[in-house]
Amino acid sequence: MTGTRVLVLNSGSSSVKYQLIDMRDGERLAAGLVERIGERTSRLKHTLVAAGDTREQEGPIADHEAALKAVASELGRDGLGLDSPELAVIGHRVVHGGEFFSEPTLIDESVLTEIERLIPVAPLHNPANLTGIRTAQALRPDLPQVAVFDTAFHTTMPQSAARYAIDPKIADRYRIRRYGFHGTSHAYVSRETARLLGRAPEDVNVIVLHLGNGASASAVRGGRCVDTSMGLTPLEGLVMGTRSGDMDPAVIFHLMRVGGMSADEIDTLLNKRSGLFGLCGDNDMREIRRRVDEGDEQAALAFDIYIHRLKKYIGAYYAVLGRVDAVAFTAGVGENAAPVREAAVAGLEGLGLAVDAGLNAVRSGEARLISPAGARVAVAVVPTDEEMEIATQSYALVNESENPRLT
Ligand code: ADP
Image (tube, rainbow, N blue to C red; front, side, top):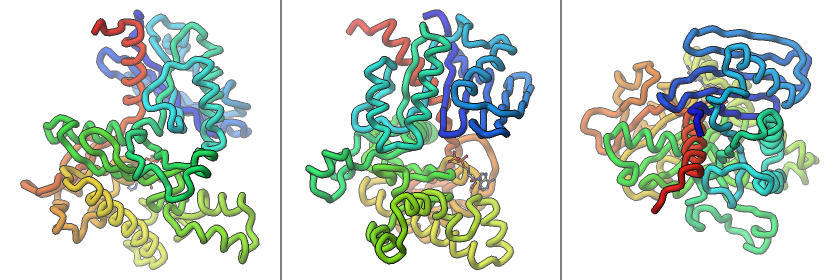
Protein backbone atom coordinates (compact mmCIF):
# COMPACT_ATOMS: atom_id res chain seq x y z
CA MET A 1 0.00 0.00 0.00
CA THR A 2 1.43 3.35 -1.00
CA GLY A 3 -1.38 5.74 -0.12
CA THR A 4 -1.81 7.34 3.29
CA ARG A 5 -5.23 8.92 2.89
CA VAL A 6 -8.54 7.58 4.12
CA LEU A 7 -11.95 8.65 2.86
CA VAL A 8 -14.52 8.23 5.64
CA LEU A 9 -18.12 7.90 4.47
CA ASN A 10 -21.15 8.10 6.73
CA SER A 11 -24.20 7.36 4.59
CA GLY A 12 -27.43 8.14 6.45
CA SER A 13 -30.98 7.67 5.25
CA SER A 14 -31.07 11.05 3.46
CA SER A 15 -27.53 12.33 3.83
CA VAL A 16 -23.89 11.49 3.21
CA LYS A 17 -21.15 12.96 5.41
CA TYR A 18 -17.53 12.56 4.43
CA GLN A 19 -14.00 13.44 5.44
CA LEU A 20 -10.70 12.86 3.70
CA ILE A 21 -7.92 12.41 6.26
CA ASP A 22 -4.18 12.00 5.76
CA MET A 23 -3.02 9.43 8.28
CA ARG A 24 0.61 10.54 8.27
CA ASP A 25 -0.30 13.46 10.53
CA GLY A 26 -4.07 13.14 11.00
CA GLU A 27 -4.66 16.22 8.86
CA ARG A 28 -8.20 16.69 7.56
CA LEU A 29 -7.87 17.56 3.88
CA ALA A 30 -11.52 17.84 2.93
CA ALA A 31 -14.88 17.45 4.61
CA GLY A 32 -18.44 17.79 3.53
CA LEU A 33 -22.04 16.83 3.59
CA VAL A 34 -24.81 16.05 1.12
CA GLU A 35 -28.24 16.65 2.64
CA ARG A 36 -31.84 16.02 1.61
CA ILE A 37 -30.92 13.33 -0.91
CA GLY A 38 -33.98 12.39 -2.98
CA GLU A 39 -35.59 15.82 -2.59
CA ARG A 40 -35.62 18.73 -5.01
CA THR A 41 -33.65 20.89 -2.60
CA SER A 42 -30.64 18.63 -2.02
CA ARG A 43 -27.55 20.48 -0.89
CA LEU A 44 -23.87 19.68 -1.12
CA LYS A 45 -21.41 21.52 1.10
CA HIS A 46 -17.74 20.81 0.49
CA THR A 47 -14.82 22.30 2.41
CA LEU A 48 -11.18 22.23 1.50
CA VAL A 49 -10.03 22.38 5.09
CA ALA A 50 -6.54 23.93 4.97
CA ALA A 51 -7.66 26.74 2.67
CA GLY A 52 -10.90 27.22 4.61
CA ASP A 53 -12.54 27.24 1.20
CA THR A 54 -16.19 26.10 1.15
CA ARG A 55 -18.33 25.47 -1.93
CA GLU A 56 -22.06 24.88 -1.81
CA GLN A 57 -24.47 23.72 -4.45
CA GLU A 58 -28.22 23.23 -4.35
CA GLY A 59 -30.43 21.25 -6.66
CA PRO A 60 -31.91 17.77 -6.88
CA ILE A 61 -29.61 14.84 -6.07
CA ALA A 62 -31.74 11.79 -6.76
CA ASP A 63 -30.10 9.06 -4.70
CA HIS A 64 -26.99 7.96 -2.81
CA GLU A 65 -25.25 6.96 -6.00
CA ALA A 66 -25.68 10.46 -7.45
CA ALA A 67 -24.61 11.94 -4.07
CA LEU A 68 -21.36 9.97 -3.97
CA LYS A 69 -20.61 10.80 -7.57
CA ALA A 70 -21.11 14.49 -6.74
CA VAL A 71 -18.77 14.13 -3.74
CA ALA A 72 -16.18 12.38 -5.93
CA SER A 73 -16.40 15.18 -8.46
CA GLU A 74 -15.95 17.89 -5.76
CA LEU A 75 -12.92 16.05 -4.39
CA GLY A 76 -11.61 15.73 -7.95
CA ARG A 77 -11.82 19.52 -8.45
CA ASP A 78 -9.40 19.90 -5.54
CA GLY A 79 -7.04 17.27 -6.92
CA LEU A 80 -8.17 14.84 -4.20
CA GLY A 81 -10.26 12.57 -6.44
CA LEU A 82 -11.12 8.96 -5.73
CA ASP A 83 -8.70 7.94 -8.49
CA SER A 84 -5.75 9.38 -6.52
CA PRO A 85 -3.01 6.85 -5.72
CA GLU A 86 -2.74 8.56 -2.32
CA LEU A 87 -6.08 7.06 -1.31
CA ALA A 88 -5.43 3.90 0.72
CA VAL A 89 -8.89 2.86 1.86
CA ILE A 90 -12.49 3.96 2.17
CA GLY A 91 -13.85 3.56 5.71
CA HIS A 92 -17.62 3.26 6.04
CA ARG A 93 -19.68 3.84 9.15
CA VAL A 94 -22.16 0.97 9.39
CA VAL A 95 -24.78 1.32 12.09
CA HIS A 96 -25.74 -2.27 12.85
CA GLY A 97 -23.25 -5.12 12.89
CA GLY A 98 -25.35 -7.42 15.06
CA GLU A 99 -23.52 -9.88 17.30
CA PHE A 100 -21.39 -10.90 14.34
CA PHE A 101 -19.02 -7.98 13.81
CA SER A 102 -16.89 -7.06 16.80
CA GLU A 103 -14.03 -5.51 14.81
CA PRO A 104 -13.56 -3.25 11.80
CA THR A 105 -13.98 -5.55 8.82
CA LEU A 106 -12.63 -5.63 5.28
CA ILE A 107 -15.70 -5.64 3.05
CA ASP A 108 -16.37 -8.53 0.68
CA GLU A 109 -19.59 -10.07 -0.63
CA SER A 110 -20.14 -12.16 2.51
CA VAL A 111 -19.84 -9.04 4.72
CA LEU A 112 -22.39 -7.24 2.52
CA THR A 113 -24.75 -10.20 2.82
CA GLU A 114 -24.50 -10.11 6.61
CA ILE A 115 -25.12 -6.33 6.75
CA GLU A 116 -28.15 -6.96 4.55
CA ARG A 117 -29.40 -9.72 6.86
CA LEU A 118 -29.41 -7.16 9.69
CA ILE A 119 -31.82 -4.79 7.91
CA PRO A 120 -34.83 -5.95 9.97
CA VAL A 121 -33.13 -4.66 13.15
CA ALA A 122 -31.84 -1.45 11.49
CA PRO A 123 -34.39 -0.62 8.79
CA LEU A 124 -33.47 3.07 8.55
CA HIS A 125 -29.71 2.79 8.64
CA ASN A 126 -28.29 -0.38 7.15
CA PRO A 127 -29.89 0.04 3.68
CA ALA A 128 -28.31 3.50 3.32
CA ASN A 129 -24.96 2.18 4.56
CA LEU A 130 -25.12 -0.64 1.99
CA THR A 131 -25.87 1.73 -0.86
CA GLY A 132 -22.94 3.89 0.19
CA ILE A 133 -20.61 0.90 0.14
CA ARG A 134 -21.86 -0.45 -3.20
CA THR A 135 -21.54 2.94 -4.88
CA ALA A 136 -18.03 3.47 -3.51
CA GLN A 137 -17.07 0.00 -4.72
CA ALA A 138 -18.37 0.81 -8.20
CA LEU A 139 -16.33 4.02 -8.26
CA ARG A 140 -13.09 2.37 -7.06
CA PRO A 141 -13.41 -1.43 -7.43
CA ASP A 142 -9.71 -2.00 -6.71
CA LEU A 143 -9.62 -0.11 -3.40
CA PRO A 144 -10.04 -1.83 -0.02
CA GLN A 145 -13.20 -0.77 1.79
CA VAL A 146 -13.65 -1.24 5.52
CA ALA A 147 -16.84 -1.32 7.57
CA VAL A 148 -16.65 0.16 11.07
CA PHE A 149 -19.73 -0.80 13.07
CA ASP A 150 -21.55 1.36 15.63
CA THR A 151 -22.34 -1.78 17.58
CA ALA A 152 -18.82 -3.29 17.59
CA PHE A 153 -17.52 -1.70 20.80
CA HIS A 154 -20.49 -3.11 22.71
CA THR A 155 -20.02 -6.75 21.74
CA THR A 156 -17.89 -7.19 24.88
CA MET A 157 -20.95 -6.69 27.10
CA PRO A 158 -21.54 -9.72 29.29
CA GLN A 159 -24.71 -11.74 28.68
CA SER A 160 -26.17 -10.38 31.91
CA ALA A 161 -26.17 -6.89 30.39
CA ALA A 162 -26.84 -7.81 26.76
CA ARG A 163 -29.82 -10.15 27.27
CA TYR A 164 -33.39 -9.07 27.92
CA ALA A 165 -35.33 -11.08 30.47
CA ILE A 166 -37.44 -12.91 27.89
CA ASP A 167 -37.58 -16.51 26.67
CA PRO A 168 -34.14 -17.12 25.09
CA LYS A 169 -35.68 -19.23 22.31
CA ILE A 170 -37.79 -16.28 21.20
CA ALA A 171 -34.88 -13.88 21.69
CA ASP A 172 -32.57 -16.02 19.58
CA ARG A 173 -35.11 -16.70 16.85
CA TYR A 174 -35.66 -12.96 16.31
CA ARG A 175 -32.11 -11.87 17.28
CA ILE A 176 -33.52 -9.82 20.13
CA ARG A 177 -30.81 -8.59 22.50
CA ARG A 178 -29.19 -5.32 23.48
CA TYR A 179 -26.66 -4.31 20.84
CA GLY A 180 -25.93 -0.69 21.73
CA PHE A 181 -24.96 2.09 19.31
CA HIS A 182 -22.61 5.11 19.10
CA GLY A 183 -19.88 2.52 19.78
CA THR A 184 -17.22 4.30 17.72
CA SER A 185 -17.74 7.39 19.85
CA HIS A 186 -17.78 5.49 23.15
CA ALA A 187 -14.54 3.71 22.16
CA TYR A 188 -12.81 6.93 21.14
CA VAL A 189 -13.99 8.99 24.11
CA SER A 190 -13.17 6.35 26.73
CA ARG A 191 -9.64 6.06 25.32
CA GLU A 192 -9.18 9.84 25.11
CA THR A 193 -10.42 10.16 28.70
CA ALA A 194 -7.73 7.74 29.86
CA ARG A 195 -5.20 9.81 27.92
CA LEU A 196 -6.45 13.00 29.58
CA LEU A 197 -5.91 11.34 32.96
CA GLY A 198 -2.42 10.24 31.87
CA ARG A 199 -3.26 6.59 32.40
CA ALA A 200 -3.53 3.46 30.25
CA PRO A 201 -7.08 2.64 29.06
CA GLU A 202 -6.72 -0.82 30.67
CA ASP A 203 -6.42 0.82 34.09
CA VAL A 204 -9.35 3.18 33.87
CA ASN A 205 -13.11 2.79 34.43
CA VAL A 206 -15.18 5.42 32.64
CA ILE A 207 -18.85 6.32 32.32
CA VAL A 208 -19.24 7.88 28.86
CA LEU A 209 -22.26 10.10 28.24
CA HIS A 210 -22.72 10.66 24.50
CA LEU A 211 -25.37 13.38 24.41
CA GLY A 212 -26.20 14.47 20.88
CA ASN A 213 -29.60 14.47 19.24
CA GLY A 214 -29.43 10.71 19.81
CA ALA A 215 -27.98 10.01 23.26
CA SER A 216 -26.46 7.01 25.00
CA ALA A 217 -24.44 6.16 28.08
CA SER A 218 -21.90 3.40 28.47
CA ALA A 219 -19.96 1.78 31.28
CA VAL A 220 -16.39 1.04 30.19
CA ARG A 221 -14.15 -1.09 32.39
CA GLY A 222 -10.47 -1.08 31.46
CA GLY A 223 -11.22 -0.13 27.85
CA ARG A 224 -13.99 -2.69 27.35
CA CYS A 225 -17.69 -1.89 27.28
CA VAL A 226 -19.64 -3.72 30.01
CA ASP A 227 -23.01 -1.99 29.61
CA THR A 228 -24.70 0.57 27.42
CA SER A 229 -28.07 2.26 27.40
CA MET A 230 -29.27 1.67 23.83
CA GLY A 231 -30.69 -1.75 23.05
CA LEU A 232 -32.04 -3.71 20.10
CA THR A 233 -32.49 -0.32 18.46
CA PRO A 234 -31.35 3.21 19.36
CA LEU A 235 -34.69 3.86 21.12
CA GLU A 236 -33.80 2.51 24.58
CA GLY A 237 -32.14 4.44 27.39
CA LEU A 238 -31.72 8.18 27.84
CA VAL A 239 -34.23 10.88 26.94
CA MET A 240 -33.11 12.09 23.50
CA GLY A 241 -33.92 14.90 21.06
CA THR A 242 -36.96 13.12 19.62
CA ARG A 243 -36.83 9.61 21.17
CA SER A 244 -38.48 8.63 24.43
CA GLY A 245 -35.75 6.33 25.72
CA ASP A 246 -36.79 3.92 28.52
CA MET A 247 -40.48 3.32 29.07
CA ASP A 248 -42.72 0.58 30.38
CA PRO A 249 -43.20 -1.59 27.24
CA ALA A 250 -46.87 -1.89 28.22
CA VAL A 251 -47.35 1.73 27.09
CA ILE A 252 -47.22 0.29 23.55
CA PHE A 253 -50.00 -2.28 24.18
CA HIS A 254 -52.02 0.44 25.86
CA LEU A 255 -51.68 2.76 22.88
CA MET A 256 -52.69 -0.10 20.56
CA ARG A 257 -55.65 -1.33 22.60
CA VAL A 258 -56.96 1.89 24.08
CA GLY A 259 -55.56 4.48 21.68
CA GLY A 260 -56.23 2.43 18.51
CA MET A 261 -52.77 3.25 17.17
CA SER A 262 -50.89 1.01 14.73
CA ALA A 263 -47.36 -0.31 15.30
CA ASP A 264 -46.03 2.10 12.69
CA GLU A 265 -47.77 5.07 14.29
CA ILE A 266 -46.32 4.20 17.70
CA ASP A 267 -42.89 3.68 16.14
CA THR A 268 -43.06 7.20 14.70
CA LEU A 269 -44.41 8.62 17.97
CA LEU A 270 -41.62 7.15 20.10
CA ASN A 271 -38.74 7.69 17.67
CA LYS A 272 -39.61 11.00 16.06
CA ARG A 273 -42.14 12.85 18.21
CA SER A 274 -41.04 12.10 21.77
CA GLY A 275 -38.06 12.94 23.94
CA LEU A 276 -37.35 16.65 24.43
CA PHE A 277 -39.30 17.51 21.30
CA GLY A 278 -42.37 15.57 22.43
CA LEU A 279 -42.18 17.09 25.89
CA CYS A 280 -41.80 20.75 24.96
CA GLY A 281 -41.81 21.15 21.16
CA ASP A 282 -38.04 21.78 20.89
CA ASN A 283 -35.22 19.30 20.62
CA ASP A 284 -32.31 21.72 20.46
CA MET A 285 -30.79 22.13 23.92
CA ARG A 286 -29.81 25.74 23.16
CA GLU A 287 -33.43 26.66 22.55
CA ILE A 288 -34.61 24.69 25.59
CA ARG A 289 -32.13 26.45 27.87
CA ARG A 290 -33.15 29.84 26.45
CA ARG A 291 -36.78 29.03 27.27
CA VAL A 292 -35.88 27.75 30.75
CA ASP A 293 -34.00 30.97 31.46
CA GLU A 294 -37.09 32.93 30.41
CA GLY A 295 -39.20 30.99 32.91
CA ASP A 296 -40.94 28.61 30.48
CA GLU A 297 -42.35 25.81 32.67
CA GLN A 298 -42.85 23.27 29.89
CA ALA A 299 -39.21 23.59 28.83
CA ALA A 300 -38.10 23.43 32.49
CA LEU A 301 -39.99 20.17 33.00
CA ALA A 302 -38.54 18.68 29.80
CA PHE A 303 -35.05 19.64 31.03
CA ASP A 304 -35.71 18.09 34.45
CA ILE A 305 -36.94 14.82 32.93
CA TYR A 306 -33.85 14.71 30.69
CA ILE A 307 -31.53 15.30 33.66
CA HIS A 308 -33.34 12.85 35.95
CA ARG A 309 -32.84 10.02 33.44
CA LEU A 310 -29.21 10.96 32.92
CA LYS A 311 -28.56 10.93 36.65
CA LYS A 312 -30.21 7.51 36.99
CA TYR A 313 -27.81 6.10 34.38
CA ILE A 314 -24.78 7.66 36.09
CA GLY A 315 -25.88 5.94 39.31
CA ALA A 316 -26.61 2.65 37.57
CA TYR A 317 -23.26 2.54 35.81
CA TYR A 318 -21.47 3.54 38.99
CA ALA A 319 -22.95 0.40 40.53
CA VAL A 320 -22.12 -1.73 37.46
CA LEU A 321 -18.48 -0.59 37.50
CA GLY A 322 -17.97 -0.55 41.28
CA ARG A 323 -15.08 1.87 40.90
CA VAL A 324 -15.36 4.89 38.61
CA ASP A 325 -12.31 6.95 37.62
CA ALA A 326 -14.06 9.37 35.27
CA VAL A 327 -17.37 10.52 33.86
CA ALA A 328 -16.92 11.90 30.34
CA PHE A 329 -19.42 14.15 28.54
CA THR A 330 -19.37 14.22 24.75
CA ALA A 331 -21.32 15.07 21.52
CA GLY A 332 -23.32 18.24 20.77
CA VAL A 333 -25.04 18.61 24.15
CA GLY A 334 -22.31 16.99 26.26
CA GLU A 335 -19.57 19.17 24.76
CA ASN A 336 -21.46 22.44 24.75
CA ALA A 337 -24.21 22.54 27.34
CA ALA A 338 -22.62 23.50 30.68
CA PRO A 339 -26.03 23.57 32.47
CA VAL A 340 -26.63 19.92 31.50
CA ARG A 341 -23.26 18.84 32.90
CA GLU A 342 -23.78 20.82 36.07
CA ALA A 343 -27.29 19.47 36.66
CA ALA A 344 -26.38 15.87 35.83
CA VAL A 345 -23.83 15.60 38.65
CA ALA A 346 -25.50 18.00 41.12
CA GLY A 347 -26.03 16.25 44.44
CA LEU A 348 -23.68 13.37 43.62
CA GLU A 349 -20.86 14.57 45.92
CA GLY A 350 -21.41 11.41 47.95
CA LEU A 351 -20.23 9.44 44.90
CA GLY A 352 -17.17 11.68 44.59
CA LEU A 353 -18.68 13.57 41.67
CA ALA A 354 -18.67 17.34 41.35
CA VAL A 355 -18.21 20.06 38.77
CA ASP A 356 -16.16 23.22 39.24
CA ALA A 357 -18.38 26.08 38.05
CA GLY A 358 -15.48 28.08 36.57
CA LEU A 359 -14.00 25.13 34.66
CA ASN A 360 -17.44 24.02 33.49
CA ALA A 361 -18.13 27.45 31.99
CA VAL A 362 -14.98 27.42 29.81
CA ARG A 363 -15.73 26.93 26.11
CA SER A 364 -13.09 24.94 24.25
CA GLY A 365 -12.74 22.29 21.56
CA GLU A 366 -10.12 20.47 23.65
CA ALA A 367 -10.57 17.54 26.01
CA ARG A 368 -10.56 18.97 29.53
CA LEU A 369 -11.33 18.28 33.18
CA ILE A 370 -14.18 20.18 34.79
CA SER A 371 -14.08 18.57 38.25
CA PRO A 372 -12.45 20.42 41.17
CA ALA A 373 -8.75 19.73 41.77
CA GLY A 374 -8.25 16.57 43.83
CA ALA A 375 -11.75 15.20 43.11
CA ARG A 376 -12.16 11.45 43.73
CA VAL A 377 -13.79 10.98 40.31
CA ALA A 378 -12.71 13.07 37.33
CA VAL A 379 -15.49 14.75 35.36
CA ALA A 380 -14.36 15.51 31.82
CA VAL A 381 -15.54 17.04 28.57
CA VAL A 382 -14.05 15.03 25.71
CA PRO A 383 -15.00 16.06 22.16
CA THR A 384 -15.85 13.00 20.13
CA ASP A 385 -14.35 12.38 16.69
CA GLU A 386 -16.06 9.43 15.06
CA GLU A 387 -14.56 10.17 11.64
CA MET A 388 -11.00 10.10 12.96
CA GLU A 389 -11.73 6.85 14.81
CA ILE A 390 -13.17 5.26 11.64
CA ALA A 391 -10.16 6.46 9.65
CA THR A 392 -7.70 5.16 12.26
CA GLN A 393 -9.37 1.75 12.46
CA SER A 394 -9.73 1.40 8.68
CA TYR A 395 -6.13 2.41 7.98
CA ALA A 396 -4.78 0.12 10.69
CA LEU A 397 -6.76 -2.80 9.26
CA VAL A 398 -5.49 -2.42 5.69
CA ASN A 399 -1.94 -1.93 6.89
CA GLU A 400 -2.18 -5.02 9.02
CA SER A 401 -3.70 -7.16 6.27
CA GLU A 402 -0.96 -6.10 3.86
CA ASN A 403 1.86 -6.44 6.40
CA PRO A 404 0.74 -9.25 8.71
CA ARG A 405 2.74 -9.45 11.89
CA LEU A 406 5.12 -12.39 11.84
CA THR A 407 4.34 -13.48 15.36
P1 ADP B 1 -26.23 14.12 16.23
O1 ADP B 1 -24.86 13.71 15.70
O2 ADP B 1 -26.86 13.13 17.14
O3 ADP B 1 -27.16 14.70 15.23
P2 ADP B 1 -24.79 16.19 17.70
O4 ADP B 1 -23.83 15.41 18.53
O5 ADP B 1 -24.24 17.03 16.59
O6 ADP B 1 -25.99 15.32 17.22
O7 ADP B 1 -25.61 17.13 18.70
C1 ADP B 1 -26.62 17.96 18.22
C2 ADP B 1 -27.30 18.64 19.40
O8 ADP B 1 -26.33 19.29 20.22
C3 ADP B 1 -28.27 19.72 19.02
O9 ADP B 1 -29.56 19.19 18.75
C4 ADP B 1 -28.29 20.59 20.25
O10 ADP B 1 -29.29 20.11 21.14
C5 ADP B 1 -26.96 20.34 20.91
N1 ADP B 1 -26.07 21.51 20.87
C6 ADP B 1 -25.23 21.88 19.89
N2 ADP B 1 -24.56 23.01 20.23
C7 ADP B 1 -25.01 23.36 21.46
C8 ADP B 1 -24.72 24.43 22.37
N3 ADP B 1 -23.84 25.39 22.08
N4 ADP B 1 -25.36 24.45 23.56
C9 ADP B 1 -26.25 23.49 23.86
N5 ADP B 1 -26.56 22.46 23.07
C10 ADP B 1 -25.96 22.40 21.89
